[in-house]
Length: 336
Picture 1 (cartoon, rainbow, N blue to C red):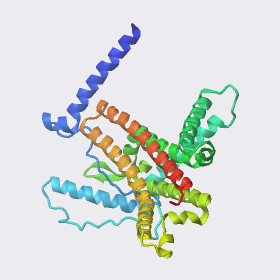
Picture 2 (picture 1 turned 120 degrees about the horizontal axis):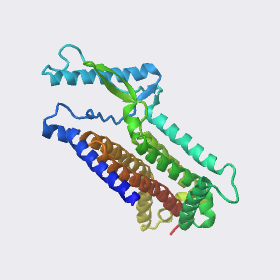
Picture 3 (picture 1 turned 60 degrees about the vertical axis):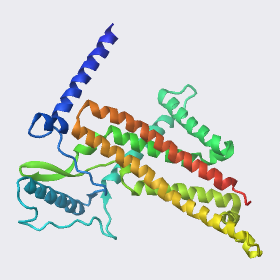
Picture 4 (picture 1 turned 90 degrees about the vertical axis):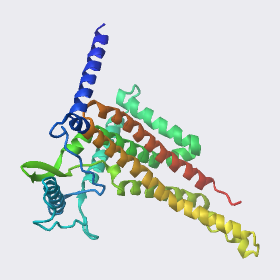
């Protein structure tokens, strides 16, 4: 009976929060004539922002604050840029280095992964603790997944790299979901019209930075090509440069040359597809969460969190799974 009452209270509280969130959100504020929504209108910036050194960060903050001042002028009916020239921001220079908010997020993910796995597997016991049992179960799932595609022996060889890719993508996606309120609330800014405006965030999900998915795609690509050469030596290149029949004077060899070039293009395109698949899903997820929080705060956002948990799992499985499939093709390739 107590459980039913608790569930009933949770349901009632959720319904009340959903209604309140709708009323004070952007949609409800317009409908009911409120002065402004509970959550400020978010600004979506695709490029990662530098947080260190301070001089580079202040350049970005100053540019964003100038933008907000111009927007405030437009809201008051003044023309933007009438009193001051707005400086154009070009981002980091070619030889300029800075620690970005997405780099901090990737480091945070790496630290959490190390603490989780090392802490749970440092002193293994015959009767495992709950954390050790969870880690063993996760490793067994990934190992069985790799073995089902590559076979037991090759699956064990590929396991370290594939497991690292899988868990990094998964942890990065899930940590980003759980820490999105902190991601969106902590950062640097300045006062604009007597109100503090956040110009750049201290941390931001690493998956929303094109560089991180690209780095993972390159790791996957190099890993597959390495095993392709290891399995077939330089004969692996015959898959892409099939000039044997042409050199023997066989006109039908033109088809083999064309197919080989298609194979080469498809091999290189994998880098692009891997990169933008992960980047697009992670970026779209963050934008969706931020916009739902702006439109209908509180309870409605939780449904999006649940969806993003599933998306993060799917993306990690797809990235690791496609790496295994391409590796299987490279290792088992035979000249036809």
